[in-house]
Amino acid sequence: MLPRIMSEHAHSITGIDIHPGATIGGRFVIDHGTGVVIGETTRIGNNVRIYQGVTLGALSLPKDAGERLRGKKRHPTIEDDVIVYSGATILGGETVIGARSVVGGNVWLTESIPPDTTVMLETPRLIIKEARRKAG
Image 1 (cartoon, one colour):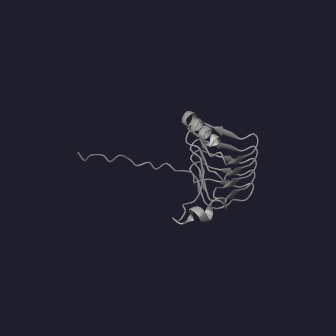
Image 2 (cartoon, helix red, strand yellow; image 1 turned 180 degrees about the vertical axis):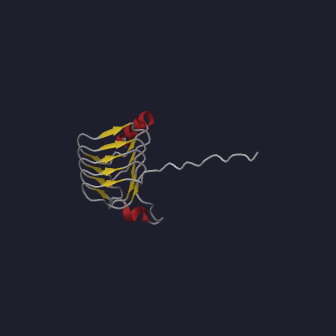
Image 3 (tube, helix red, strand yellow; image 1 turned 60 degrees about the vertical axis):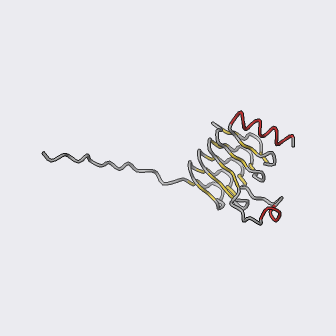
């Protein structure tokens, strides 16, 4: 009960929600942490950086899954030397982000990626429309 109380207090001050059951390695950094959520069975390696709005969560569960999945891994594993940029969502207990990988901003992942991989959305492109001139 005490770890949960401490977690809720820290969340109210920082805007960061780390479940006390999460396993976090050394030299872990949350930069601009508002909105970060780290689920109970998440495993985070060493030298990992994450930014604001990142969710390391579970996939949706069927209604009857509570007791069946209690104590099972439901949240992702983030291996060593990974960077997860703003707004990324990584879900699922079988999802592993391989060592030295980079997950770009606003990426949604429910599948593992191998070590030394960069995952990002396509670069947005500017579309310029000329103003229509009034006939006159």
